[in-house]
Amino acid sequence: MQRLGGFVRFTLLCVAAAPLMAQTQIGGGTCSSSTLNGAYAFSLTGRQVSSSGNFTAVFQGNGTASFDGLSKVTITLTASTVGAAGTPLNWSGTYSVQSNCVGVMNITSGGSATLNIALYDTGADFLVTGNDAVYGYSGTGNNQPSGCAAATLAGVYTFNGTGFGLSGGAVNGITDGGGLLQFDGQSKLAVNVTISASGKGPLPLTLTGSYAISSNCVGSANLTDSSANAYTMSFSVYTASALASTDLYATLAESARFLISGGAHAIYGQPTATGASAAFDAASPALEKTPAPNKSATGERGE
Image 1: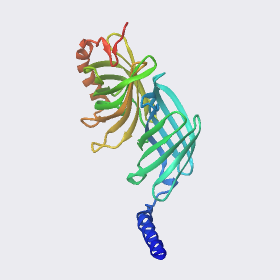
Image 2: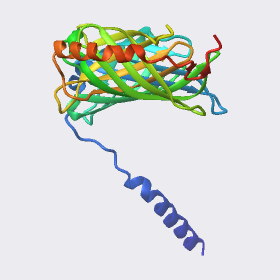
Image 3: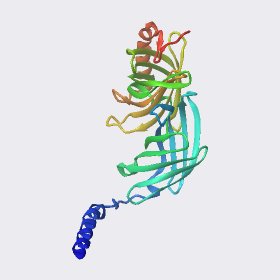
Image 4: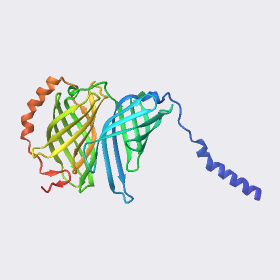
């Protein structure tokens, strides 16, 4: 009986261990650190949640991640947090990629973070997750064009973003937004976005202002509504469209009121700067007549 009992225990142990022994470590592939090489438009979102499930800090940024094809990475972002909108952030560190197209970035300058990388589309795009002492991060990167100017952004783009409402220096709810961006191909930008905040009705925003974009395909805009309330937008350009036009990572924020981050995509292809400017000017009278809302995404302004 003792022998039989031992045999039964051995058999049960083997059965229990069988699924673990059968698990396969995914491998193969042809990636290496050289697969990540050059400049990528980069969008990164961060969240800190308390043990009770409340958001205590949030982070949204976009910009450029540049890889040297060997081991060094430099990240330049424009970031918005609970405390400030449109703040420059510069990180640098090292990275490595395995043959199965996953790897890691270790940020050691300007911050201290570990980001896991997963490449796809033969290295033209990547996904990241990770954390530092404050935030848990997720993000994505796409190849950038070789050079940009104001005329790179011309015409009408759809925009959709998700984010947070802010009040009193804290997160007070979920805020999303969607609508249209119109660039004149030179320096002018108009924004028609409807903000949707938890527990509140839709809030249409009509914003106008100026934008600028650098040769590294990262740009920003300063916008106001007709009541002179200020908003900031930052964007990073990448090429991933069947229309052979530019797409954007974009964030929109009103300091201490809300911040949302998402993407923008050209609707009609890429018109010339001259054509885009004429279309913008034709729309301007209607934009100027649009009244500004008397509420922000988080409720009454109390002004």
